[in-house]
Length: 95
Image (cartoon, rainbow, N blue to C red; front, side, top):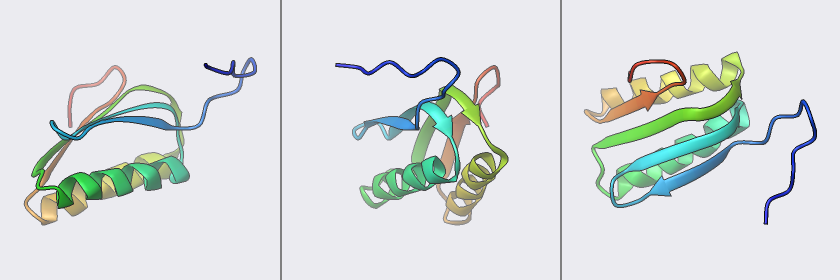
């Protein structure tokens, strides 16, 4: 069952995780809180042995600067540990 979001409101961030492939698909609004949720999921996938993780943000309808900055910081953190976080952003090429 889904609950309608009031007109003009944006849903909180929701993630759908493919543990086998190391993929996360996010929908809703990317804020600092949402980025923290994503970081925890990425770190879990990394602990499970994934060296390449895909974060699909094409379903994100709104994002603030802090949420976006934290995703970039997460990407750099993984790169420093020889891991790769590929981010698919709305209307953008993978990063």
